[in-house]
Length: 117
Image (cartoon, rainbow, N blue to C red):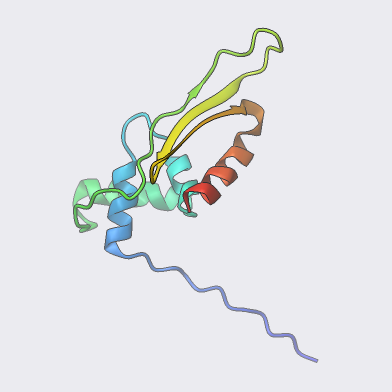
């Protein structure tokens, strides 16, 4: 009995999508976080940024759908000595302040991806 193995196809992203994601990559914003939030490989996003700056990737100017802002890691909770990530978010009129243990940053990234989707 032969098993069929599904063929993985490369995703194709529209110029508008590329432009909106590249526009999110401002100074102080983690390129990796932007990539994670959009289910992209960070190296692919860095390549888009490099190409857009050199002009070899013609992408239209668009306003980003989501606004990424820098996050801060607190010096630590003096009572426990643990660092935490603090983020203030606003989306569609909803606001949230997130405080997350820094050692769980990967789970925060997954949570943010699902919340921003």
